[in-house]
Image (tube, rainbow, N blue to C red):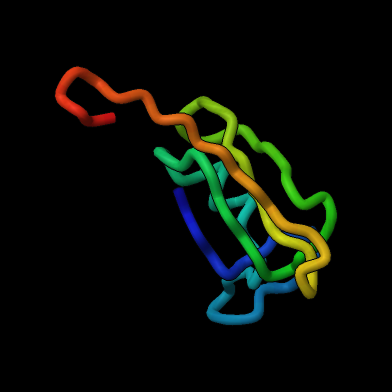
Length: 87
């Protein structure tokens, strides 16, 4: 799970710092292995949740709240415990 102060990628927007994009949640979710969920919050743009193909070969959820608390993002993560109490 990643919690980042970034938003969904914005096509055509120039990099702002050292050739890096300000909003890169989509790139992060689709290119870094092992990510299941990204909770973002910078652009606050609709849609408030989207799913992309992850680098590990499974879908990755990107969720972000609406601006000024106009909408919340809720994520339920089911955990399955093994016999030793671990996940």
